[in-house]
Amino acid sequence: MRKLPVPEPVSAGLVLSYKCSSDCKHCMYACSPKWNADWIREADVRRFLSQLSGRIKPAPYGPDTIDLNSGLHFTGGEPFLNFELLLRAVEIAREVDIPSTFVETNCFWCANDDVTEARLRQLKETGLGGIMVSVNPFILESVPFERTERAARIGRDVFGRNAIVYQNFFYRQFTGLGVTGALTFESYLEKAGMEALGYAELIPMGRLPFKLSHLFARHRPEVFFDQSCDARLTSPHHIHVDNYGNYIGGFCAGISLGDAHDLESIFEGVDLDGRPILLALTTRMEKLYKLAKESAYEDLSDGYVSACHLCLDIRRHLVRQTDQFEELRPTQFYSHI
Ligand code: SF4
Ligand code: SF4
Image 1 (cartoon, helix red, strand yellow):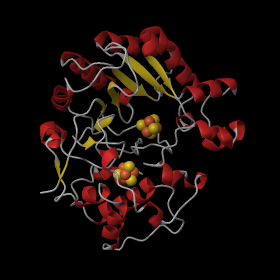
Image 2 (spheres, rainbow, N blue to C red):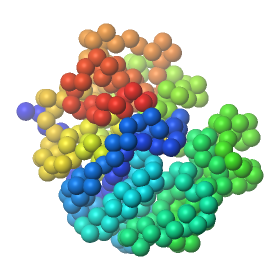
Image 3 (tube, rainbow, N blue to C red):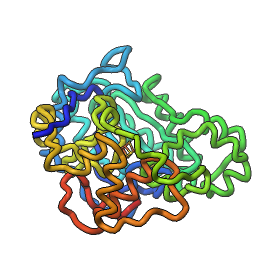
Image 4 (cartoon, protein in one colour):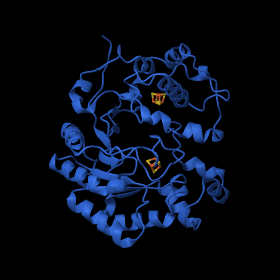
């Protein structure tokens, strides 16, 4: 049997659900308000975090500090859509001794100072280490900038240096441009100019290649045939476990390396013989393309902006035909791109 070796993770995200208040054009996990509210079960939070405990490494300055690439973050979707569950998850993480915890938020809920401060203090008292305030032109389409500013200001009051603004470039830029309220992406580009996007971390995977392909050069599929994704899919950094129990490596949403209810079985190596898509992706992209052609896959006439664009378009095609590929999970992801 061919097996894919998967090292134990050193940092991770726990996806509480894929439901989000926003529907960002760049979302790697294709989150939106349209997802079912399939919140992670409390018993699963405990099961996943207990297994991650002892494996997750603290941030470089210690377990009480945070860093985007260390520790464990609570994410989604938007975790504050279910504040009680978020609190409970933080409590469980503290009980099982997970270091360097923080929550990511788009700040939609920060409508006034009192609520913002009360919630952040409650989270801190429950054991949360810090907060990451997400700032970029895509979130700005649905979240008024005043709410982001409030979260950053009060987040610093409550968590001190453990309040991270990401990306700080956009925070400073929106402040400098005098942005108020929400702004469409087109209006943002008019104000800031196209060159501002040079500072954005535009990772051409997830929803982005489909919604913003006009920003990129496009290529024929053959250009990406040599790519193999084994290193990326099995990176021990920043893995995610979602609310359905999927173990996701390399930000590759929609690809499950296995069932996180039993992490040990994943670390013993993932059976590739029963997972042809994973086998193809960890060998050579051409293999995936040929497999897709056997089931009448048609190339996108305008080409592809990245290997991930090709990969995702093929995976979506396959999921539309059958749900037999157990590595293509959750299947709903493919209808929300
Ligand atoms: S990028 Fe963040 S805020 Fe935007 S849809 Fe995805 S999870 Fe929601
Ligand atoms: S090509 Fe597919 S498997 Fe490879 S990094 Fe992109 S999304 Fe992940």
